[in-house]
Each structure stands twice: as C-alpha cells, then as structure tokens.
Image 1 (tube, rainbow, N blue to C red):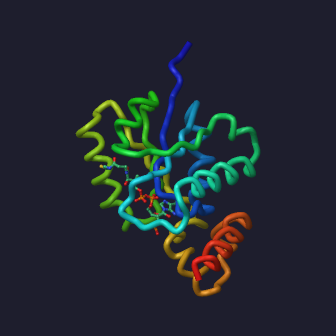
Image 2 (cartoon, rainbow, N blue to C red):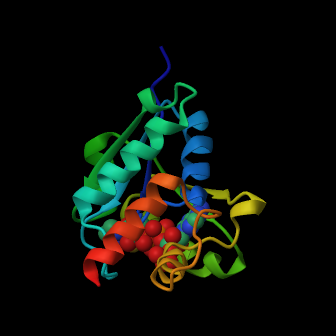
Amino acid sequence: MAESRVAIYPGTFDPITNGHVDIICRAARLFDRLIVAIAVNTSKQPVFSVAERQDLVRREIESVGGGISGRIDVELVDGLLIDYAKSAGAGFIVRGLRAVSDFDYEFQLASMNAKMAPDIETVCLMASDRHQFIASSLVKEIARLNGDVTPFVSPLISGSLVKKLAKRG
Ligand code: COA
C-alpha cells in the first residue's frame, strides 16, 4: 500500500477567514490527511485565545461538509513547525499565496524550513481570486469599526468577532 501523504497547514488563524477555508478544502483534496496547525507562540497578539481559535477552525471545517472533515485534524503547534511536522509524520507544509507581496516572506519561511528539514516539502497554493485580498488583521479592523465582515468570514466567525470585540470594549 502507498505511504499516506500527510500535510500541515500552519498559521495563526486569528480568526479563520473564507480564504483559509478555501486553502484547507483544496489541500484536503491533495493529501490523505491534513493537519491544520494553530501557532501557539506567535509574534502577533491574537484577539482569540488559542483554544478559541482551535474551536472556531474545527467548527468551520465541520460546516464545510463534503466528507473532508474526517481527514482533517486541528492541532496546536508550540515550538518549531518542522519538529511538529516530524513528530506528526508530515512530509508537506501547505501555505497560501495571495499576492506577490506574500512571496518574499513565504520564500524565506520555506527556505529556512527546508534548510532545517530537507525532507519536508513546502507546497504553496495560490489563493482563489475572490480571496486574494483577505487578511485576518483587516477583518478585525473592519469589525472593530463596526463594518460588515460577512464577505470575508462565515456567519459563525463574524458573530464570534462581534461578541469578542464587544467584551473587550
Ligand atoms: N486567505 C486569507 N488570509 C490569508 C491567507 C489566505 N489564503 N493566507 C494567509 N493569510 C493571511 C492571514 O490571515 C494573516 O493575516 P494577518 O497577518 O493580517 O493576521 C497573514 O496572511 C499571514 O498569516 P498566516 O498565514 O496565519 O501565517 P502567520 O504568519 O501568522 O504564521 C507561522 C506563520 C505560524 C506558519 C510561522 O510563524 C511558524 O511556522 N511558526 C512556528 C514556529 C517556527 O517554526 N518558526 C520558524 C519558522 S522558519
């Protein structure tokens, strides 16, 4: 039997957007198992706690349907991504590329990871055209300013954002 192809899709997911969901669905079709890995230690200061981000990502994936959720796990990654990938038996790291501006950072990330773990391949998927411009920080800014974020995130995420930001005042 062929070896199963396991991939990791890492990120901060603060919060998960329609753009992330698109990448997850497409990556899930390419690999036998996909691990969506939520970074615990990030230089960003997330609005949602790591447990909240994990819960929201899980619920988003469940709501997509189409039988993909059975092949996707949502885990936390604390420490080096490549160490996590090795311990999870993953041979691939998936990243989404939205615009040329993403390229430098993604190239650097992929190159550093490749230097540390040559056996782990980074696979970049181009964001679909309707999701090219989405970024979690802009979604949060729009929500903070009482704008409509429903073109960029699901009703679950937009409702959670409104509640979260109201609590924070
Ligand atoms: N659709 C919508 N938005 C997307 C997107 C897509 N397809 N792809 C990326 N983005 C956005 C995110 O919303 C995020 O927006 P924001 O900056 O406004 O919040 C931004 O692009 C990039 O975020 P993300 O893809 O979540 O990556 P990140 O830069 O937050 O995460 C890690 C980087 C977690 C992968 C990286 O820091 C890491 O590997 N950490 C583990 C520690 C480690 O190994 N470090 C050494 C690395 S060499």
